[in-house]
Length: 350
Image (tube, rainbow, N blue to C red; front, top):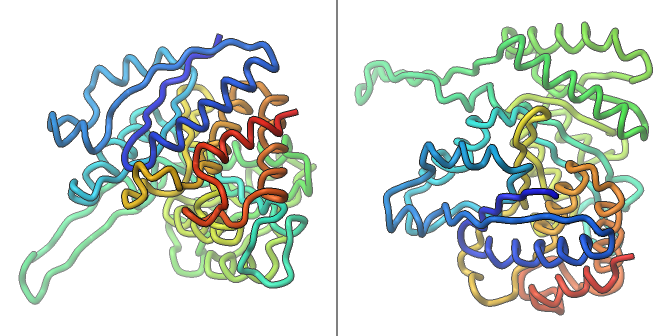
């Protein structure tokens, strides 16, 4: 019996999550596993009504679940940054979800802006450190408001935080068992403190994984090669900021936000899975948004829970839908409504 906490979120979040839950119900019946869900209405509307983002008691309740399924965060009626920090980052940091896991995979039938590249070329994973770096929120102003103003933003990296991320990346590369190659993405030539720590730790841990090939690329070169030769990559590990940037590039080369899903992982605790795209408020209630990213996030949940067969069923079905049915991944241009795409995924489950 799996317990899944569901935060549908803002905008079109509830619509895409609903399709994911439809698929979950269909898979569970085919494979005979049981689950329960509980909806939590945290998000923009809840904040505007109550002034509450994420109460302390919510963390205790979430700890009774196996994972969290998140729809989207973002409400145009709420000042930017409030929901993202108060809800999304609060969950990531509060549950020490120190791994951000982002598969970058081009499915058959999906258009990519990279000329002459296909599904056989774009299939890698980015592992982003998720709790440290520039996102810890440390810094200060000096002489604020004057001509001599200085703004300091601290990138905090600890040996513990860096090493556990790198070890996870090596283990994941071994388990993925494809090219068995792990690339460290950084900026050692300029950011000499943080990336000295990252590089030393990477090289030390690599000695324990003789079966894994390793290499290093600067982050700017990584962006270049992701576009020119994405087939070079198997698994990439990097810090919080660089990971945030290159995964958005990854989403574009795999066809767009409509197909991109990710996980915020605590291997020993509560993990959270979500579609990468935003809440797309202008499409709310129109039944035209693409739900495949949310369905792919549901696939990641099943893989995380150990239901590998169910995860494979969903991925194969999504690939059949993209290759045979959809005209586009863009909202309103798919040739099907949001709910019809969910129905198609269920139809092709085998």
